[in-house]
Image (tube, rainbow, N blue to C red; front, side, top):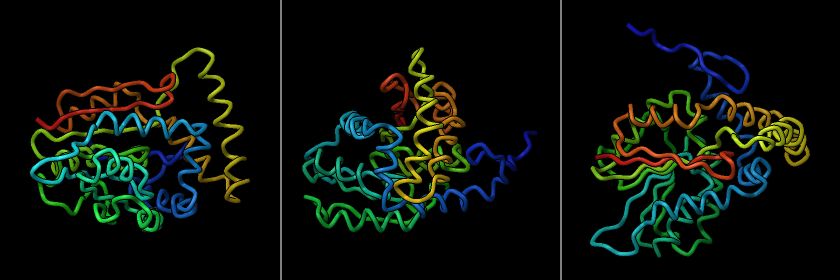
Amino acid sequence: MQEAQTTTHFGARTVPLADKQGLVNDVFFKVASRYDLMNDLMSGGVHRLWKDRMVARLAPPRQGARPYRVLDMAGGTGDIAMRILDASHGHAEVTVSDINGEMLAVGAERAKGWRYPSRVKFVEANAEELPFPDRSFEAYTIAFGIRNVPRIDKALKEAHRVLVRGGRLLVLEFSSVDLPGLDKVYELFSDHVIPPMGKLVTGDADPYRYLVESIRNFPKPEVFSSMIAEAGFRRVTHTPLSGNIAALHGAWKL
């Protein structure tokens, strides 16, 4: 019988599994108002193109007998939700969910200026224990959030549960650079540029240092794809982006 997991990674540290969520919450509490800037620093701004690619892959319908229901998990600041609503011309109905109330507050304030503010709602929730009934959504998206979940396998199973049959899973996450030369440059940038820039912008380098380390500890694309399949999804794919700095994972509930 396999022993229950009791420890996990928090950046480069090994911590009790029960402690990780609180530590992650503290990181994002510190940077909530500048979270998108954080992704700009870590990706050189290219994350915006990757997010556009994710929503283009989702291709939310622009019409239909009922709204196209999307759960955007760990999407507190709302940048994915806004893209989905614009791409669907307001036909989609997006629930933005995040465990961090500070992040949700940022997104809710921003949403007041969107083209379709009435088509989004913000719900504080844990990805491992979603407060939504079975088969509530046609799509589940999560961008740069899955690696911060203590029990990724539980989050993936919850994603499967709340999707309708035929529902779509899309996960955008930082990955492992695999281009010779670029890997060394990216490593130097991550270690020696991002934390000091983070300290300059926010006054604290630790959240940025954690995020760099969390990327290195995230499973390789092939391993993560296997985890998605183990959660019950089918037609699992992953697409490298920008030399595999990031990867777009996709799957279906069939």
